[in-house]
Length: 404
Ligand SMILES: NC(=O)c1ccc[n+]([C@@H]2O[C@H](COP(=O)([O-])OP(=O)(O)OC[C@H]3O[C@@H](n4cnc5c(N)ncnc54)[C@H](O)[C@@H]3O)[C@@H](O)[C@H]2O)c1
View 1 (cartoon, rainbow, N blue to C red):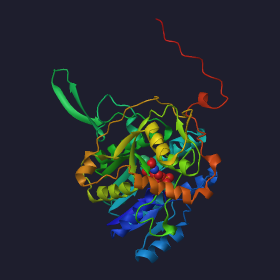
View 2 (cartoon, rainbow, N blue to C red):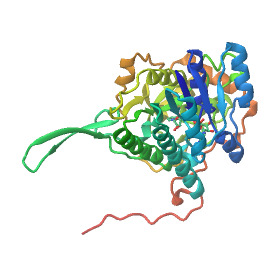
View 3 (spheres, rainbow, N blue to C red):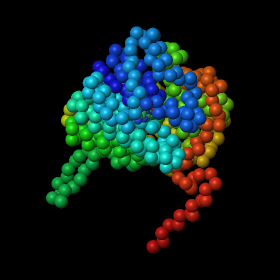
């Protein structure tokens, strides 16, 4: 298959590109390197020494004899170049990772909110509009997030995208249907992903586009078998307060002797998936497209759920690290349950890689090996979800219940 990987220089996109290339697909990476520029802005780079794109491609070619193509392109602003590439190359599938993906980064300031909205919504919409305008029958596979569902459930398992409902008409007839699960975004970043869902529903309905939307959990781990093959292929590892995601951040903190910073009570339950399973899920999604005219195919791309304080305890028990509770920068319930269906990927043959000691050790070893590259000042999360949460901000008056 001819496959475009939008965002193929990133944490999920790079190992996915290698995996698909190894399987014999003709892969073109499209990436504007904005994530590397954000490293410059935040003065916090990947813990692992990721190489320039040219070195990555040359190393892959030398090691496997396979060619990965690369286009440096901002898909949110350079619509016509994207359209031309789709028209000329006629890809069978486009995998879309190319969005600003950190919730804390999206909440840093009004500039960061606007950047995230402009980038993510235009990236997704330009891709959809270009597929329609090109007339090419492309299967679009998008990386969404479990966060579109919000983090609470009404005691039920979160279904895969669609909620069965029953409505009673004026005549008393009961009609059953499935609607998109009500969106409940917890940050500007998550809000862009909920908007993406509406774009997809519209383009699938109006233009018959074939679209798969993967609601992914938090990805942990660093390398896949392919990125481990040569140090010059190494994957990125984010540990800073904006981009570092929870389990990887704990493992890195333990490795450099920094207390594990648990936000709030640590009672938040989150969904997780290992990076090796991410690339396998992408392969399964690409190989199993929906039919033309079918509704958007939504799959929950996660393998397990864990409470944050339990993860901190697990890492502390195995490494001897200490745990420190810090104020939660997010605006969310202190505790939540999360039960999630993931039958669709299991039915397609996914064999989940669950949290095993060996894999935790792999991340810890990577973190120890590159610990000298860490800037410990960058570990705390400095973003806050509201003005009142900013250090030194006047506290909002306590809310009183209405008495009437
Ligand atoms: N990492 C996770 O834990 C996680 C969890 C759930 C969902 N996701 C989703 O998976 C996708 C990939 O995440 P990631 O962790 O690899 O992020 P990442 O930031 O490492 O990679 C995203 C890549 O997209 C590129 N990009 C961004 N905007 C672009 C644009 N306008 N034009 C061209 N390239 C652009 C960036 O330069 C970067 O290389 C994201 O959409 C994210 O929301 C990630």
